[in-house]
Image 1: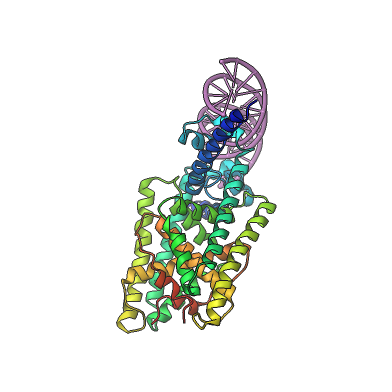
Image 2: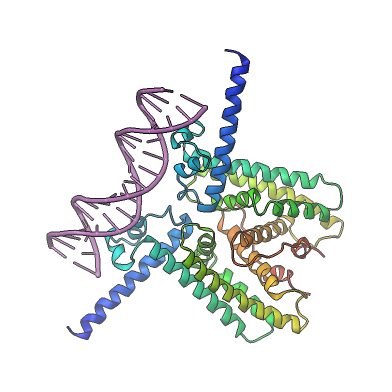
Length: 198
Length: 198
DNA sequence: GTCTATAAATCGATAGAC
DNA sequence: GTCTATCGATTTATAGAC
């Protein structure tokens, strides 16, 4: 068997995996885990439902894979923000803009699926534990940025972790708000930062 | 048929309806609409699943009834806050405390089911429309409080509705955060009000 | 008013052909 | 690698007895 042939199959496999993952992310995010049918995922990318099981062990396997990927991306975003040049305030501005940028597309799906996954009672304790640790890791990154800002006298006093949670809660809350079709609101970084700025 | 007999049956019916509603609220809120089974609802209050259909037309009927009830309660809370004596700031403090008070019990379930219902794609457009109108009504109430505060120079300038959305987004976000089991955070009204205070 | 039994439909997962 | 056919389990909703 030539390596060329292997590479070709591998490419197809990667492509299908990506297609199914994206479709699943969107549907899980919009309808929740239980309400999303395998057949919906596959038909949305014009594949048979049987094929789903060539790429995922089960429905839950797909869900967990997607959620953990999203969390890893979140952690990376925070790390990127922290390594951004500029003041801690600039770094938070950068993170907020990143977080809201794709707010009409994939970014929003990722946002929503995270919240759902944490609130879901359908995942094993192990998975939940892993999720919590990853999320804590992201929060820790934000806390460090805030602590830096406190040292520079930019931000108000208080437990940096608690401030980070307030910051993220507002960010999540606004994203969720705009995910609905009631009234759209422009997300102003300045307004968000009022929460912690001196 | 004596009125006494009618009253007795009515009392039982009211009691069962309340039992089932409460159980359904908790389960819908925790697991979402699709993942909640009728048998779970009924067995959690030691009734047969068949009996469920004597009190609700369908699973969706129960869900919609509960969600609309929650929205009505929300509107009433805002109205109560607005009629509270004291400054607009005091009124928002009152509302925030109300909103977070039962945060470990029914209050939290109500909070979560609202978010789920808005994000769910399983409800008809009519129901969604009704929900949006009710929610807007509540936001309008908060906007009026904020507008009063602006006139008195208590709050920052800007569209009162937009500020109300920021305020509610943070409130929702914090509630959702505490609904998880990662890190509990004390909800400080003073910190929340930093968002809009001068 | 409440229960058990059952119908009817749905969906996750597997098997086997191409 | 992909599809169709199908099993098996689950679940909503109904029917009928007490």
